Structures are given as C-alpha cells and as structure tokens.
Image (cartoon, rainbow over the protein chains, first blue to last red):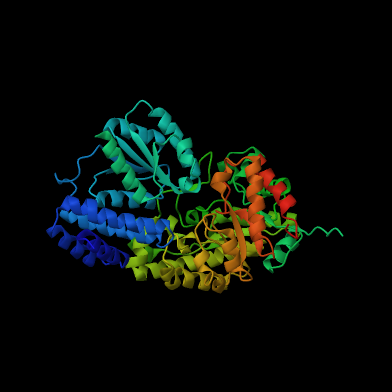
Length: 212
Length: 346
C-alpha cells in the first residue's frame, strides 16, 4: 500500500469518528513527506471523494460527509491559509444557494473544494437570480456553482442562464431536484451537474484542465 | 360477482390492517394545486381556512383521492415560533432566515401554545370544515414536523448538525421544547377532526443521519412523541431512504411509512410487511415531465410490486406534489389506479 493510501485510510477513520485532533495529526504527518498543496489535492480530496462516494452508495450519511468536510477545511486552513500564494491558481469561482436558506449542500461542496486547495467566494443563500447575475458580471466569475433545494428555484436557473449567455462563465448545478430528475440540469441550461461534492470537485478539475 | 365499492375510509382502514381492499388507496398529496382550482395566488390561497378546505374538496372529487390533506406549508410551524415565511408564485412557501442564529438562544426557547398561536388556527379551521364534509367517509390527514426534524428550519441544517454532535445539553433542551409543541399541535389537529397525523421526519433517514446515531437520538424522540399523540401516525421521511430502519420504525408506534423512490419498492414492501403500511413512491420531481404512457406504466409497475396483500397506499415520495405537475398527469395516475389497482392485482 502506498503512503498516500495508508494516510487516506487513517484519515477516513478519524473523520468518521469526528476526531479532529487525529485528523490533524495524520495530515501534518503526511505533510512532512509532501507539500501542503499536494496534501490538499491528493490526500484530503481523495479521502473526501471516497466518503462522498460512500454516501452516494448508501453506506454513509450526509451528516458524516458534512462533518468530514468541515474538519478537513479547518485543518487545511492551518497549513494552507486562504491567501497563501501556494494555493491553486484557478479561474475566479463562486458558490451560492438560489432563493432559499437551505445551505447544507452548498457548505459541503464549499468545504470539499477548499479542503482540496481551491479558493472560492461563498455568496451565501436566499439570493435572487438577478442578484447572482449582477455578482457574476461585476466580480467576473468564471465558474459559478449553484445549489438548490426547491424545484421552482431549480427552474429559475434557466432565466439566469439565458441572461448570462454572452458571458464567459460555466454554470455547475447541484441539489435535491437534480438528484430526482437526471434530465433537469439540461433543461435549465446548466453546463454541468454534480450529484454530490465528489462530482463537483471532479467537474471543477475538468473545467480547469479544459481552460488551460 | 362484482365487489361493492368501499368508501375511502374503509379502503384505507382495510389496507392499514394489511388486507386487500377493493382497490389500492390513492393519496395524491396535493397542496398548492388547490390554489389553481380556485384561481387564487398561492399566498392568497393559504391565507384562509375556507380556501384550503374548498381546494381539498375540489381536488378530492377531481382525482378521486382517498384522503383530504389540509397541509398548508412546512414552515407554518416555525412561523408559530416567530420566524418569517417567504411566499412565491410557483412553489411552496419557504422558511426565511433561521429563527435561531445563536445556539445559546435555545436556552430561552419556549414552545408556543397552539391555542394562543393564531397562524395555526386556520389549519384547525380547515380540518373542522373538512370533517363536516367527509361525514366520516374520507380520512383527513393532519401534518406535524417531527421535533427531531424541525430544527432544520429553526437553526439551519449545518448549525443543527453541530448542535447534535457537540452540544448535547442544548440539543436535549431543544428536543424537549419541540416535543411539547409537536404533541400539542398534533393533538389539536386530531381534536379538530383529523383522522391521523403525518409525522414528517426526514432527518431520521439514514440518507441524512447514521443509523447508530438515530437510535440514540431521533428514535428516542419519535418513541416519546408518538406515544403522546392521541391518534394514529404515519411517519414520512420526505424522500429519504428507510429500508435499513425496518427494524426500528415499527417500534416508534407509527402505522405507516412514507418511502423514497430511490429504494426498491418490492424490497421496502417485503421489509415492512405486516409491520407498517408502505406509502409511496412516485417521483414527484420527474412527474412534471411524465407522458401519459410513462405515468400509466410507472403506476402499473409500482402497484404490481407493492400492492398485493394490502398494506400499501399509492402516493408520491415526498409528501407534496410540485405545483408544476400537470392536471392531465394527475388524472392519468387516477385512471391507472382504477385500471391496475383493483384487487386482486393481476
């Protein structure tokens, strides 16, 4: 078993036991033989992806995915502060919850991306489509991640897409309505759909590669 | 010999006793469609008890639904605690910013008394109207959010998870407050004429919380709360999985389980056989774009898998059908239930 795999298994056990101290110890030990950005990209993201996949297959619960992300985010902020020059160079990215205040899904994706070394703007929740469009334009956002809980909010993304059709921004959607209808993301004109935080991470990596 | 047609009440009670009625009971859990029937905005519709009662009566007649469902909107319960509700033209009213921003405020939180909380009285009044209309022939389903799931609207889910895992004393206090409210609210609806209470408890699903943790928390809450509700309850996990809870949910004292479309209905029926009646599991989100043929085939398939032997009610998997689902799709479902849901199932 290679070193990263061994650390990853230990880290997963620590995270699922909600043992932040153990998680921090494992990450710091792994960092000695590597660099903070590699730790984020390899060890932490692979562990969080595996935890996310286990939720997807029904073997773990969303609360475990959430708590794991939060713990990793806290640890990574210590070894890789938000303004660190060694954080990943990336297009400007933002995340928001459309029209309501059910923020959990957004928070899980946010933590997973940040713990994997990305930096993104958290626009919060309860945002109207018009407000989001305005921020995309003024902040020159290149990757916009949108989380929704309610079907009508998901359907409103079509208006957002129409109004941003001449702007260079990739729209990534996720949330309950999309999970229950796998055609919906295409109907609203999104560029990508991530069914969970692991997929969201994969999509962001893909967009990064394509933009190189 | 042709069987005598049962009333909705007889049909539902027969299936609840795990026997086969004349046909599969149909619970199309429509809330906002009543506004459409009355030509009102969703906000106006939910502003008066008479509107919701009239809407339910029209919907029941139109789609031959085997219950009245005077459920207004989930955040009405946090509205009772003082929170704001946000209305929209094309969907259910939603909860605004969580009422509890600082978890230490939980220490001061008290359960509102139903008799003193005006916003809840319109629900009770609509139940009273429906009680007179039903003449005992159509079950009336009241709704209460479980004490364990209400905090998602009271605090927001992230804060609630951290409360559960790291602040046991505050969590226990919040459960005490919410249990008192849930029992008071459920019993008020039963006293007004509700036949049963739908105990909405999505947080108890292993989709959201590990089973081991549920056993220590939500399971205990459900046992304590349901024991004090003076009528039958149906536990609904609002699209959450529940196959692995088949050993636990019956112990909470509930009679029905609302199941997800993400789990196999045959396995669910088998797991809960003779323990709980299975309610489900049409995909309400996808239903929006079903063709007539798809709607018919899906209803036929679900009935074939879950209806034999009774103990089954056909419904959606979330407890509320989206406003965007077309009337013709709902009529197709009704027709398919009549055609394929007549016992014995072929």
